Structure formats: structure tokens, C-alpha cells
Length: 313
Image (cartoon, rainbow, N blue to C red; front, side, top):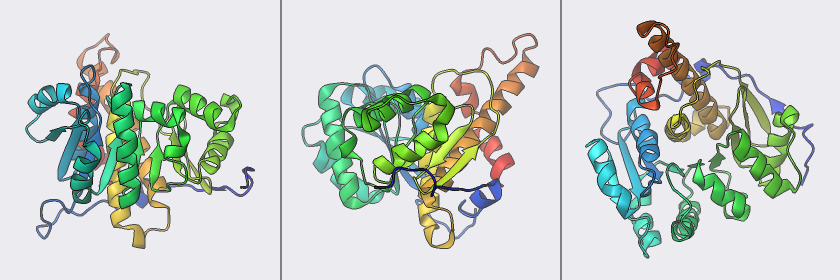
């Protein structure tokens, strides 16, 4: 396999490219045609993360959003919103059969938000990934899903419908696990290409001040400026957003020239940073002297629709 980066093509994407995949709001659509998203995550300790991922998908315009969580997370998640469909099954022994039943109803899957690192749950998620690969479903892997991939990269290697969304630290750990050498933050784009190629061409959205997006063949960068507020949960919104854009991109795969996963990552990264900045700036005006310091992810959720329309409509 060629591990040089010379052949990677740099592409300049714009929000106009994203508009091609966004479903038009017409009276002809019926429930489900704008996307059915599944989020696999949620544990006794972490229920906010899957909520942010799944509900952000709905707020962006997906029609249905499912969460597949542990039994302990089920009741809390059901109380957060009646709009979410919650399946407390991640700790069941027959989870693969359960997922095999539900997966045909979904267009796109997100794995990782609030997953935790319980050994049994991670074993079950490995089975779920096998079913996802069998059914050729697009999948975004974030959070503790990336922990699992770092431990066992082969479970997702060569599956080109997969997107990994590591932050800086997660990227360095994954890079070292796969390439057997330490990453250098000065060469993030080159290293992202190498990592993608070593994993068989799966897509990577390496988050940072500048987001690096690649599938080993093309590279795109997102220079959009967010805010200095780094409260927990923002990555979960991004995972849900990329999962939604990925669903739409696959629906329009025959009419777009950019790989669906690359366009989905670009759209999600631009959207999140604009949403982050919008909310931060609003709070800075509403609470003089606070400078947005009090912003939490729940504040960002309220602005999803408006930020989306300002960016992509």
C-alpha cells in the first residue's frame, strides 16, 4: 500500500457544495425520507452525550432518531425528549440479533457518544459493527467508539463507509496504535492521510483549530473559527451532525462529485463551528462581562435550526 501523501488531492469545499445534498422541504415527502439516524451509546454514567448526538440530528432535519443504549441509560434518555426513540439493549446478550432487526430501518449510524468502556458493552459493540458492515451502512465513530477502534483497529479497517472523528489526543493515540510511531502535531494533514491509508481508506475528520478531513485520496480543511469555550458535549453534536449529513450525502451519492463521507465531514465541521461561535457571541452580548464563559452545550442546541439556515439555506 502506498503510504506517501503525494497523491492526495487537496479540495476546496464550500457551503454551496453542501446545499446540493440537503433535502428540500416539500409537501411530497413522507416521514423518514429526510433521514432515519441511529445513535449507539449511552451508559449509566453518560446519558447526555447520546442525547446531544441524537437530538441534534432531529434539529438539523432528520425525521427519526433512535438511541441504542444500556438498560441503565434508558429511562433517563426517555425523559429527555419524547421525540427520541430509545432502545435499552446494549447490555443484552442477543444485541447482534436486535440490531440486525432494526438496522435496515436506519440510513446512518453514529457509534460512541456516552458509550463508556465496560468490557461487555464494547464486546457487544464489536458485534454491532460486524452487522453494520454486513448491511453496508454508513457509520460515524466518535468518543469511546474511538477507544475501541484504537484497541482493535482491524474491526473497522478497510470499511470505506466508516468515518472516524478523533480530537487531537484521540488522533495521536490512534495514529500511534496503527502506525507504531508518535504523531507530530506540525504534520496533521500528512499524518491523517497516512492513517487513513493504513486503515484501508476510511474517512477521518481530525478535529482541531483547523479540521483535517481525508479518505487517503483527497484532503479538505475547515478554517472556520468557532469560540474559545470548550464545554463537554460539542463533539456529540458534531457526531450527530456528521451522521445526518452523511445520510443525506449517501442519498444523493449519484449526483455529487465529492465522496459522500468527505462532504458530510466538511458540512458537520463548518456547521458546528458556526453554531459554537453564534451561541458564544449571543451570550457575550446578553450577559455583559461574561464573554460567553457560561456557555454550555444545551445553549448551542437552541440555535441549531437558526445556525443551519444561516449556513446552508
